[in-house]
Length: 348
Image (cartoon, rainbow, N blue to C red; front, top):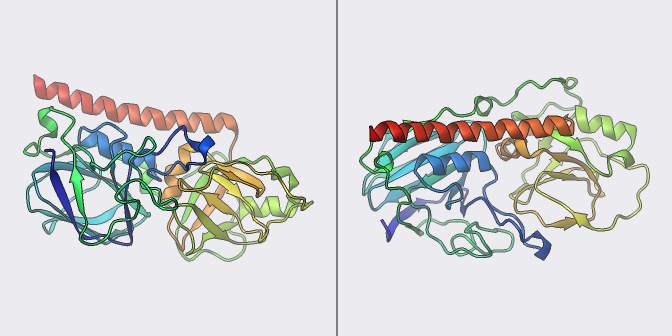
């Protein structure tokens, strides 16, 4: 299917080409980039027979309309969009055949923030610095280093899998989404206190957090506020980071800190006292104190928090963080095993 194209009829608020990011270049100042919700992204690729890191589309909120110019196979994962294929409603977390001329429309997220579209063969853009991801801050990679626009034409690579289950004429099939992706809230072993301050306008997403290196430098009041407050996600947030609003967080001493390494999930506190949760397009170093770190297993949940909604930080231990990551890896293994079983049945 080399040479196939997807016409972007409506690009939506922010749609970009992403993969699993640029790993191994942070020492050169190159940001990770890549899908903010890597869990959903990897599953989408597996559903169409792609390698987990094949380039696909990250769709933020919508509305988005795409026309396929050749028969193919697609999958949509992530948050629950109002999605249709030629006016016929389609479900997320399913592998679907598309025919030449069909139009896929995502009209908006019912909840959550981002959806992921994988197409068999992947979006065929050049690999730059080890990745096809778009770094929107540095303006390189992906499709001309920018978000998609109405009228763009996306090249699609040759399908990687010859298995009949991934052929355009094959029937639909899907996987069970992780149970926790269907809920805004879920229970942890330790429930936090009730709301403190103003109740957020939008939904609250809970993420587990480890204490940061400078956590002991914050006042007792600030430490308590950090855990008990529901932090509103402000409109000036983006793929670099979520800027939050709430009670001012203060340190006991305000001496300057040397620049240090930061990662997606790092929670910095600038002089304003309003936290910033760094995301995939963030810089590689920073000098603001780090009050916490969102655990790797919850970065996908962080990506689905909506502007105007709120974040709630739940303290966890390193052992709990490791077990949460193992649980995520078990889910991915189960999905891979289920697809392998389906392939084997098809060959019998």
